[in-house]
Length: 417
Image 1 (tube, helix red, strand yellow):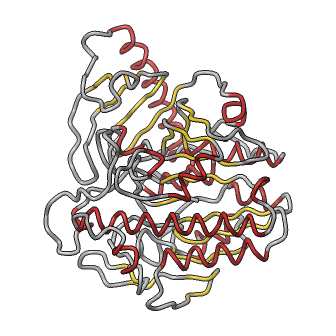
Image 2 (cartoon, rainbow, N blue to C red):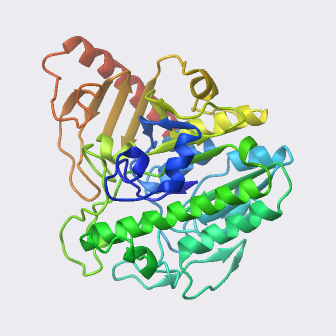
């Protein structure tokens, strides 16, 4: 299960003082809550590509936010977690946001999913399911498989949950159900009953909290469906967000040219579009009562590309070739994993993390703001808010990570070639 633009600090189990998420909190209590879980990109399309392929965005061939035109090409042909599992006899489905290509050749059924309900581009109105983007023509974007469908007036988060629950209730084992929520991604729409729960908050926080609560309600309904079908103990559930919270102007329905402050990165610096922690560190919850310990907090860094190898290892299905992620079962079960280097690149920014140390080059604070030239070094164990640049005082660490950055840049150029 994946949310859109959900901040690291916007769940109860991640310290939110305002937003009530009892079902996700219960999921974390039954499993492993990752404190240092990362998206592989600070924006949605590359992040979702990494999740499905187990590859870095550049390796998967999607490094930027994809458009909404009906001829938009997306994810290049390659294996995904869905194609690997369907090839092994699993039933597979995706409900919700795709954002990896709009044209028919890029649609979910081409990548191993046997069933799809949702939208193909990046965002839609939650009630009309039409995408409005600046001065461009409105575009309806709701599909059942390869057929365009209309569900006018029905709240999209609830529609996604309805389809997922119906699939889980009817499908035979084994199955993969990818529940790709877009909430709380803009436009900021929430049902009246959810809004009423947060009437004491300012509007920006109220609508954000209401949208997240509706996602939490959906998680609760999906867990209940698994319990009712006797599968909860032996089902792996993974929940995360595609990137950090958005501070984009378009979150405001009135169109004010100011940064939106509705989402929370929980004290981390940066927002969506930034390689500061707030743009890439997101909630990460794993639950599998029959296979994982309960009530565990894990601070080991891991990333979205690790989902595919972890799930396939648990399912005893061979890995596709050239996967970049790591099987996390030893970490999730025993708490042990060799130290490794994680790396990111987006729109001129680069970041390298090894242990507690993070190198950040040419950072931007959020999507739509220019990068600031320069190289910065942070110790995230002591300074998770990235407030104190240590580049001038830890020359040995800086040199080591700069060397890793050269290797990372060479790897990026090789993939792109």
